[in-house]
Image (cartoon, rainbow, N blue to C red; front, side, top):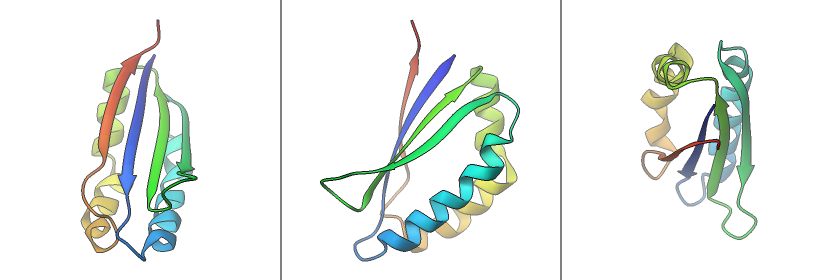
Length: 94
């Protein structure tokens, strides 16, 4: 199992827009083959910061997710409300 922690930072004042867009990624992602879970969190201390906690069956499943249409489309518009690209941490459960 591959775990991903994605740190995503919204532009100042655009936290709600970012939150709604990120929440919109959940339904199509959890329907993907190999997705074990895909859970969004928002920082209690710094509202513009969001985290996705994700578990995938394999690196191949994650790679397919990253190339999936809904994520590619999100990437085309996310510059309007995100401060930059997501920071990803990949880890393997021991």
